[in-house]
Length: 105
Image (cartoon, rainbow, N blue to C red; front, side, top):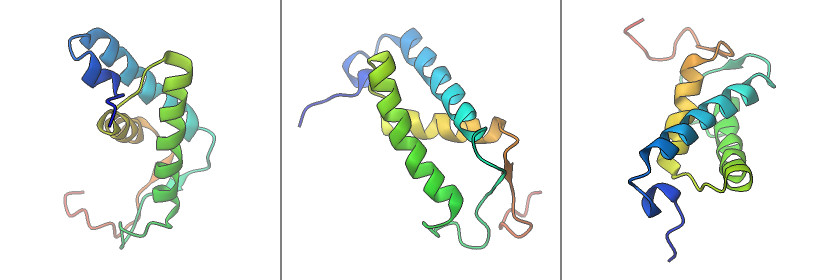
């Protein structure tokens, strides 16, 4: 197995890693703008055919390819996932279902 993740190969280059993570958040926010409002999962967050879950899978793959092609950077799955959900939190494109199980709203 070959280690490919840039973060693992050069962990001391924190400035580059932070810049790439910011670029990933920006990338995801731009992609969200391409979609109509997206409903976050409701009663069953494990419904893998739900639009949000399908969007997550597609954008993870596209973002990884984009980073490698445009920036010569191979992000870890954790970096991709964190940037994706930070972008979801910043975006106004996501709607929550009334009964999403969050009792703290």
